[in-house]
Length: 214
Image 1 (cartoon, one colour):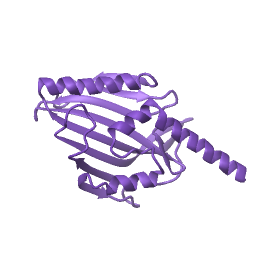
Image 2 (cartoon, rainbow, N blue to C red; image 1 turned 90 degrees about the horizontal axis):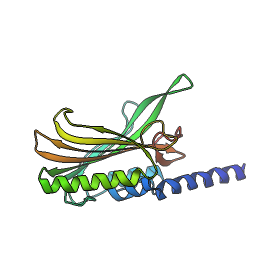
Image 3 (spheres, one colour; image 1 turned 30 degrees about the vertical axis):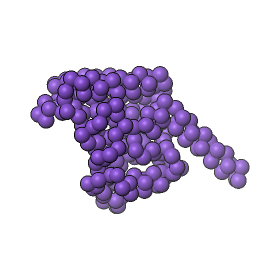
Image 4 (tube, helix red, strand yellow; image 1 turned 135 degrees about the horizontal axis):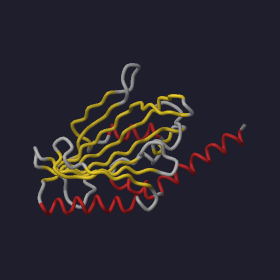
C-alpha cells in the first residue's frame, strides 16, 4: 500500500511539473499574477483571494447553495507590452456537463480569467496584436488551435478568439482573444484558463476527471 501511495504521489508530481514546464505552463506563469500550478490548489486559492494587489474584491465562498466565486481588479500588475488601464481578474467554479460512454457527467471546472483594457489607438492596437500573436505562436507549438473571428459579435468591431487543446483535451483549457469595443472605444485582451483539481493540485481543465472538492 505504501508503494502504491508513493507511486501515485510521484505520478502526480511528474504531471504537475510537466504542465508547469510546458509552453502552456510558461504562458500561465507569465500572464497570471498567481500561478495555479505552484503548490497545492487550496494554497493557490488562498494566495489569490488574499493578494493585497487585488482590489475591489467580490468573494462568494463555496457552500451547499453556491459555487466559489472571486473577482477583482489589478491596478499595478501588468504583464503586457504596454500598460493596461486596468486588468480585471475573475476566478469562478462551475459545473459543465460532459458525455462519457453515453452517460452524462457533471465536470467541475474553475475558470481563471484576466481581462485587460486599453485605449483604442493605432499604437495600442499594434502592441495588443503583437502580444496576442506572440502567445498564439508559442502555444501552437504544442497545442491544437481553433480560431474564429469576433467581428460583429455584440458590440465588437473587430477581434479574434483562439481556443487551444492538448491531444487528450475534451474541453479547451485555454482561450485567448482580442477585441475592439465600439461603445467604449476600448481595446480588450482576454485570457481564460480552465482548471480542474486532481488530488488537491490544479491541472489543465479537460485533461482528466478530477478528484476531490475545493
